[in-house]
Length: 479
Image (cartoon, rainbow, N blue to C red):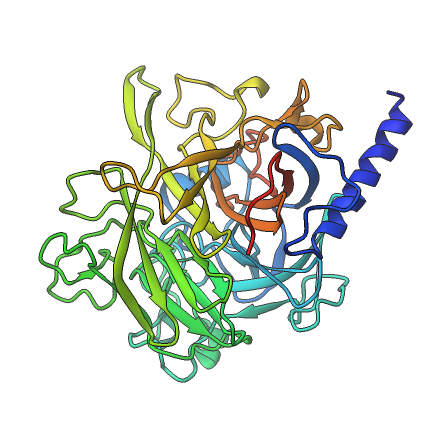
C-alpha cells in the first residue's frame, strides 16, 4: 500500500476506535471490520518525563532503582519542586466519553523510597488519531492545555479517618536521603495531610455506585475509600484471612502499620495489585498478587469479595492459580519463576478478565536478551478469562486464554517501531491496567516504574506510558 494511503487508513481506524470509547455494551466500534485474532486498533502514549508541580520528590530512591535512574537513564535526583506522573496501575471511566481517570502507581517502588511521593488520580484523554494523551479537567473532562491542579485529585486524610499515623504526622520524613540528610516534611504535605507512597501503596482503583473511589493498597493490604476530591472517608478496611491459613485472623504484610505483635503472612508488594467492581458497582473483588504464608500451593492467589453496603467481606473466597516457568540469569543458571497477576476487571457478575505476566521486559525481536541476563526479555504477558461458576477438579478457577500480549496483530502498524512483521508486542515489565471499552475492545496501559524501572522499548530510558486498544475476535458477554 502507498505510504499516504496507509496513513489515511490508520487515521480512519483510529478515529473509529475513539468513538468506541463512548460506548459501553454495544457490539464494538461502529463500522470497524471483525478480526480473526486479537488486533491493535489504537495506540497513544504519554511521555515518561511528565510532571506536575508539587513538593520535591525522589530524595529517598536507593539501590538498583537509584543506579538505574542516574547511571543508566541520566536523571539528577531529587526532582526539585515537582512530582513525576509515573506509571499507571488503574483505569476507570471519567464523567464524559473518551475521558478516563488514571491512577498512578505509588511512589518509587517501596515504602522507604516514597515518603514525599504524592498519590494522584489524573483525568486524561487518549487521542487515537494523534497518538498523544492529553490532560482533562478532573470534574468536567474538558480539555486542558497542561496537567495542572484541576487535572487531578490528590489523596489526603484531613479528618484522620485512616486509623494510623501517616508521614504528614511526623516532623521529618522517615529515613535519610541519598546524601544521608534528615529532612523536614514538606509544609504542603503537613498542612493538607496529603497521603504519600510512604503511607499507602496504591495499586488498584474502582468507583462505586455513589461515585466514591475505592483504592486497593498493598501495605495493609487495605481498602481505602475517598470522595471525588481524594478525601478519605472511612477507616482503612483490612483483609480477613478467609481461608484460615495460619493463626493470623487477618492477611497482613510486614509494612502493615497495625501489625503489632502479629506475624505477617503476606510478602511486601503482595496485596491488592488487582481489583475490580461488579456492574452494579456494589461489590468489590480483590485478588492478591502473592501467596499467603501457610498455603501448600505457592501458585494460589486468593480472590475475595467485599460488600460495600455492609462494609464487610463475604465469607466466600475463590482460588486462582498463576502459571510458572523459568529463565536463565546472568550467571547462566536456570531460575524457576512464578508469574504474577496484575489486574482484574469484571465482564459481568461472574466472568472476569485477569492479566498475568512474567518478570521479563522488552521484545527479544528488538534485541532484548532472551536469556543470559537477570532482567530477561518478556515472554509471558497474557489476558485470561475466568468464570466464578467454573472450577477444576482441584478447586481452582478455570482459565481461558483470551489475548497473548506478546502477539497482537497490527496490519496497519499503529504501534510504529514496536510492530515487527505485522506483530505488535506489549512487553512491558509491568502491565497493570486493563479496561473493557465495549464487547469487542480492551484498553490497556503500563506502569513504567519511573524513574528506575526496566525499559522495554529502549535500554537508555524509561518506557512511556502506553495506552493501547485491542480488538477481540469474539465479543465478551458484557453486562
